[in-house]
Image (cartoon, rainbow, N blue to C red):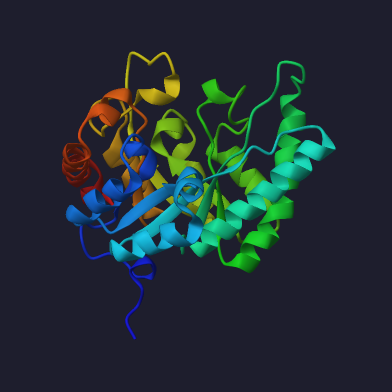
Length: 288
């Protein structure tokens, strides 16, 4: 019996996975076809794709294209103070865990959430995230998937993620007491951290390094700073150095290219995929 495409390791462009949001303005079917046409075997999907296409139909499309799902994005947003809001967030994350399992993806990426103008208690928000992950991790473990906590650059602490460093994310993952809680290293968000190498080693030693995502840090920052991500080599990040840290930590999984950039979105998908594959082959793969 043949192994379904979404459950086997890739044999095309080694290690490379295309994150769906790099091709945000491209229709999902075209995105899958472009990935396959470039010999790329894995894609990172978003829950918006599930909502648009339907869970079972999306899994069939991925399988029919001969692809695997490297991650599902995103869960999280676990900082609400009100009991009803926290219960709703937990239930939504359980649905996200179910979707991750149904797609055959190994991990769900979590952006933990920010704070409100009214409630400026960032320490309290982090505490609520810790409690929520401890609640969700056993459920993820039962479903056979992991939770990848994503630290975001500190400029996003107010509105998107009160967790800014890999060490903070690891503290929360370890506090869960579950082997299903871990971290994702996204170069855009952590390249600046002077303790990054130590934290990557810590994640590996704890067996909690679940995902590696790459894109560059471009200047000047866009009006929406999230859209300042760029093709590897266009900005300021030392990909050989960080990728070497990841390799030496023992990570052998998919490496997702996740770029939010208006110019990239305006580029024909086939052209953007060609640029990504070329830059990946020059700056990332030789050190992976």
